[in-house]
Image (cartoon, rainbow, N blue to C red; front, top):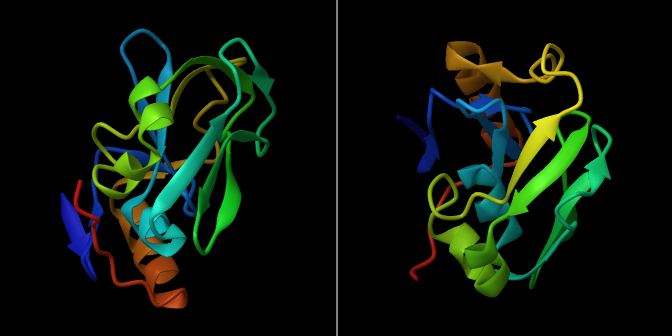
Length: 148
């Protein structure tokens, strides 16, 4: 795992180079969450509102909405697809996003409409890590984690 300015950046994930990370699963689904840098910028997450499982989302449309004391915003779908599952742990305890953004605090599992196009706008490896460093610098983020 790479780290930059205190932000954890797993090299094995895919990124939209803004807020979202994506992990392809063996069954053809994709798990989505928000990056360490995004959770830091948001501040302590107090509320999360998920779109319901079975909901179709177009690329760029929110799968969930997070609210903290200083920020509120949607978490965009990285591709067209259906939400299959939401993370009930995060629904019950939104602050988990600030504790474990790559682990227990994944947000949704989606199935893409077109698996061949699902990863077109996503980046991984050294290219993604370099772009995320620039994002972190642009917003002057110094990551920190809240305690559970």
